[in-house]
Image (tube, rainbow, N blue to C red; front, side):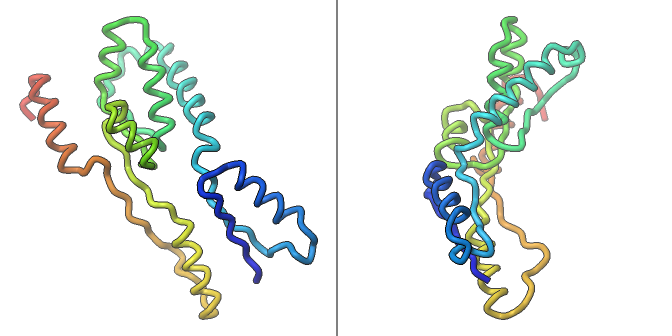
Amino acid sequence: MDAEVVFANNDAINQSQQLLKAIQGDKGARPDAIIFEPASGTALPHVATAAHHTASSWLRLSTSQRLPVNLLCAQNDAMAMGARKAFQERTDESARARWLSVPYIGVDGLPKTGQAFVRSGLLTATVIVPANTTLAMEMLVDAIAKGTQPAPLTYTVAASFPPIEELAAWREERNRGLGDPS
């Protein structure tokens, strides 16, 4: 099997050019498979915009005003930021303050986005999910070399940013400020 790994150093244009070169190349030179991990910046603006639109629409529902929300957790950091933007745009000052006091948590934890949002106070935390392309390639090469099938399930290890201990201390401090003894 002929496989080509596309590594574009998180540059979407470079990645697109490499993919097109592999796909449009001579039939004899085309690989049997192309493995790539999308450049992380390519879809983020669309994801954040969609989350903003969804949260804005939800806020127009009367149920959103009555529902007690204690945490906003999104599938990725861009979604959390898009939703946060919708809450930040609330014109009613007390509603805006209430929504912005809710902890916002995302997933991805990239240094220049999720971790930076946490450091600036825009997100409370993010879950750092390691890239899995290297692990997948190692598993593929090992399986080909040994003539075996890779394990049907393989886990990667995610990590909290900031660490769970810091989040627990933050929660205790926050609850004391709200007069909550727990």
